[in-house]
Length: 332
Ligand SMILES: [Ca+2]
Image 1 (cartoon, rainbow, N blue to C red):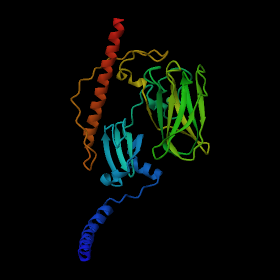
Image 2: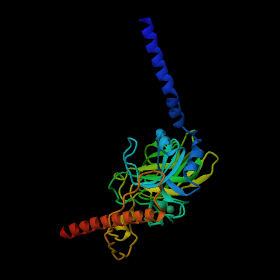
Image 3: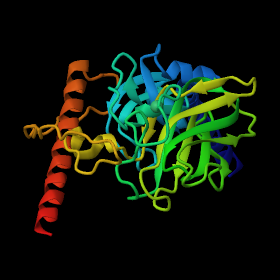
Image 4: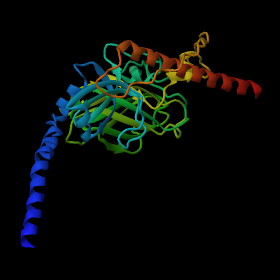
């Protein structure tokens, strides 16, 4: 009996000895890479300055098993990933343990459209109170609560955010800043220091955090403050007293998208605008599906084509909606 037990035990031990080298080797193969500092990681994710305007940063630690320490995957339109939903379309870069989703290629700057969020980049350039194309305006005057996301060239230890409001001010209700690990941190919530009816004003929001940020997000209570709540520029004053101006911007909506930029049905203010000709883009062929992330990157021309098709589809959709609105208006 005793002998039998010990033989069984020896067999079991032998099995373990046979298995263990394999198991150990597998464990060694999937060893996590060394994580860079957050600032180094951000720099690496820009891929030698190729990308700009970070839309999202998400932590997916286990993806190193598939992508290693770094992978420039390129354009993806997936909105759901790793139990996250509502992700923006963009250019995906993996720097362990984060995914960075960028909007723009640095060498293809987005054109400056009147009232586009890009009008809130750089120092203030709007001549005074009033409706000017040099400030960001939302699509509708009070259609929804709006937000404006600003990106800065380098991470800054922020002491204050300076919001230059140039038309229907007083809607700012919340300011957040992003940590370099992607976490959004609320730094202020309250009543806009610039009063409604002030015409124009600079809302100075003091910030007390102990981390650097390169992204600031403003939230506007657009539905409460009538008219388009336009923002000309957003500065971040650092702890040394220097003010930095945004280098990129994204927004919940923009008046630049009104009729795909072709129809000015409702001018947001007193500036008269001649209605430009309505150009209906041809219906594009169905867009080719984007490849899954992997070592095979899609060739650049195909990406550009996809983007053009996507843009045309959106413009076509906008125009159709605009046409329907016009028809409904005529009916009334
Ligand atoms: Ca501006």
